[in-house]
Length: 401
Ligand code: NAD
Ligand code: MG
Image (cartoon, rainbow, N blue to C red):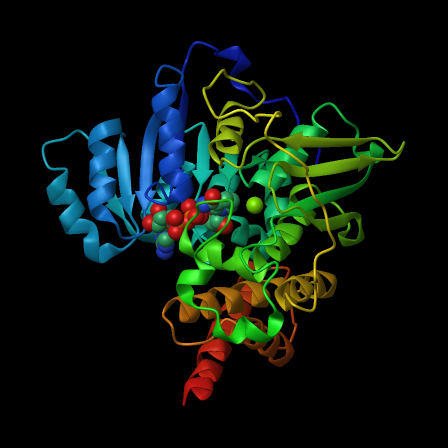
């Protein structure tokens, strides 16, 4: 997919873009609101949604005065409603509320920043409503990439990546022809354990895994970055975002996280996008595309930057990356199983119920145990997702008993 400059508010340049932020209390969500604060005359918060953090959601609602807010966790509805009593903001809840917000007629851009498969239905609702979707929720594309790609085409929606690597590729593709692209290469920081001996991986603690060298992110993606599953999920995300065959997507480790990814063209030319590791930049680009708005984000200081290093990823020490490539090759429900097994395993690791090295083992088991059937429709994908979560939890019980 080459970025298309159609369907932007060129016709209405004087009206602010109206945003719905799904996952507004998270790392991407709060940084999105930071961008809106910078451009309060050009961006307007129409709707906000979160999982269970009703206190922060109420605070955000008072600050941005959206038309509507949604709390996904129904048990927190009354607390949120009471907290916003007397304000003009309407309060809704549950999956129905999320989908209502994602497809509302008065929303121009939906920021999909819910973590995990929990973001699938609302992202699909936004796509089916033909929205511009600023997509952070990569798990949706891993779980149901083919389906999302088809819906995007059928409903005239547009996905604009928020993930820094995909934003980089997207920016490099502006003005290019699809046939001119030979391959894309996603850069990976290598995470906190790039140089750690693999025979000590079993002793990795939750605190060590949550300590990412370059990026400050939510807990799930931080663990994914430590196992390198994040890069695996991003390869699958790129496959669907850019309609590229898997053998044209490469990964290279680049510990400084300055060069965010690059495109190699058929004439041997390479275009890369660079910047300091700061999610505010790709988030802003997704909100302002196809324009660039002046902002005070940190610039690269070339005089102190030093060298930029690149190396091969180590598939043996980081089996999650290999598992992701294999699941993508297999297709069908394999990526859905990979994603759900990973979510369940990461949850168990964060609860300190399994070891770091159990994460790839549990995912591998789910991939080998669950029959790869279907994958063309939501039902079979969701069934595979559920089966993978069950398999991981059952096997984790065996591990700890
Ligand atoms: P986070 O954990 O900080 O925030 C997650 C958000 O999702 C919160 O607002 C939470 O309330 C909401 N949420 C969780 N479960 C929910 C549910 N069942 N229903 C509705 N809402 C729910 O996560 P994050 O780091 O902001 O990541 C969000 C997404 O963006 C992920 O898919 C991640 O892979 C992607 N991403 C994040 C970064 C980053 O820098 N944080 C970078 C690239 C991509
Ligand atoms: Mg990324």
